[in-house]
Length: 469
Ligand code: AMP
Image (cartoon, rainbow, N blue to C red; front, top):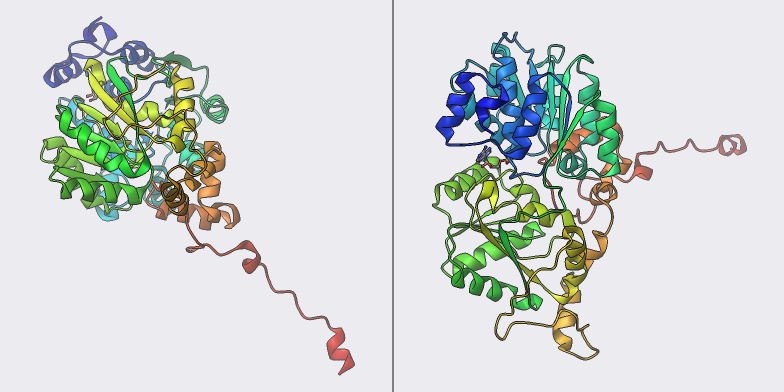
């Protein structure tokens, strides 16, 4: 199958040719014709399958005719993270270069003024994260009555990040007569319910279910003790032929620790996590893309938007707590038909998470034993065995996070942010927006959370006291 067979116009085909794609990926092959027909589409596809172009290409075709009015975008694409939103914008720039389409990117962490100026000029495509979108709507800077195409991308990640109430609200503001394209890597019941509510008689297209890791990725399990992880990582980095690599940690603070440790040992490493200011994140990402930084240590959410098509390696410094994150992490390499290598450092504590991953991907993974560092993952730590180490692990909280994270994603988002449960709605929305749209760490302490009982009005003193005076 060729792109020309999909019914796209010559200007778009030329742009695709300029990028160097020779044939559409399976999700593009399936989805593009339906989108061009104006059908709603439910796409089950993970990143790395070419799903972004499966909606951006036909959108360019559809939107090529017509003009946008000031503040009234003609299409809206909702993305869970700023990086993903920026990546979609890049897609429009690449594939829409022979068309005269205007787009605006509404993402947190960037100046309102520039975004508002663009909206005032009229945009065909509005790409936004839910929080910033609602902010600008509430300020009257954007009107949604002209939106004819809605894209909800990475719906499962939106759920994970607690954005579903915002999405429901935004969808309620859109005209009911519209085309909706809904993408998710997985289809848990909550997402299925949303898809049923938002889509009308959709065509379902699916590629590589989220439980399957890219076939072209050679994956290895590396059993180690927790305190040997950094050395194990260094050894792997030295013995592998690394072109560029992502190193995933489960916690933000470990991202910094691992990055600094690698730098200290002479590796060309950078870091990416949700606590960094947007300009620093963009700069690091640009350096990584340009090859100036070779190893990028990151958290799951921060890495969601990284689109580097020829990533050679992925390292899991920690076993992801949610098995599906493993699929997403590994999906960063072996993209678009290329090969890649992945290594997961596993401690005995983390064995249960590894087991969940193996059940999900329905395959066994080869074990790579590093001399002097290898441990037997099946041997439960015996009473008295390496006591100081086990005690240290317990003190450092190494066991705490896994236990907490066994909750399902929906429960987790409420538990991670105690304020979500108690705060009144507008306050909660603002807090969600303010929280950088991609927190990935458990909140410790009260922070700015005011417990609900403190917000209750104080009852008046009983009148009897006055009478007895
Ligand atoms: P996505 O799943 O949208 O994140 O895309 C994954 C990667 O595949 C991106 O780097 C795209 O540039 C690339 N890609 C998208 N479509 C094609 C195609 N038809 N042929 C080769 N690479 C593609």
